[in-house]
Image (tube, rainbow, N blue to C red; front, side, top):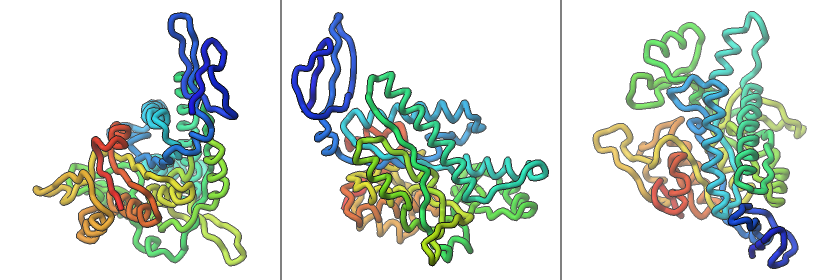
Length: 356
């Protein structure tokens, strides 16, 4: 049910409404609201933003550049919101965490370095702040009455996860082969090839254990149920270990944001998981002469493609795993596409849709 106000007078009544839009036409002002009961019946959607939504590959990564990108990203998100979706947002922090690590290492003689989990917390706050402010400001411009909450999120992991012995998560900038070999030799970085082609296919990798649970899940769920736009599990969340006594402690690692997004989707009972990255569609045989776009695949087909090795570790592979887990836990559909195609993908016009 919607309520329409003309010149401040209600044309119908209901218990509780949320304003969707406000405008003026020929000296007549109007406001359109949606009833709270209808908000609670909206399709729920978890959006996982890739690093390109915040810092593009060719950019230096200045605050000005990142804020500009975030503002454009928030316009896309608000387009989704006004179409009737209840939205929860998470995001990657690989470029930001990698850059902060470089800053720390280069200034070690001046200030002490911080552990990797603290670096994750710092960048989670940095990006969450930009998203929260931009969503609020742009929402006001559109006349949207919205409340945005950023939850600094911890994610429980297993300290015996195999990724601590064989790191897989790319962070920071891309390197040439020569640069990669030099960094591995001089700084002891773990370096891996993360793209099958291009002049700079190498990146530093760090431990990325599988997420087991979101510590702040009850708080996040309550915020969503009270109609906040929630931003949580940024950068995959801060990795922590739960001790025998139930107490938490941080551990030096990062958590994959797509796998954490799936856990977030479970917590809030989302219908759809939307993973936004730098490609419009998933590809099989990526980087080969027989490369092919995938418009839609079933859960079984996604599992087969995964087993056949079509998806690169640290890139598309964790996205596909996240989609598989989401559908196995009762999700209705998962979509992978580029940021600028978010709305079109929800209409089924593009992107790769994975269904049970």
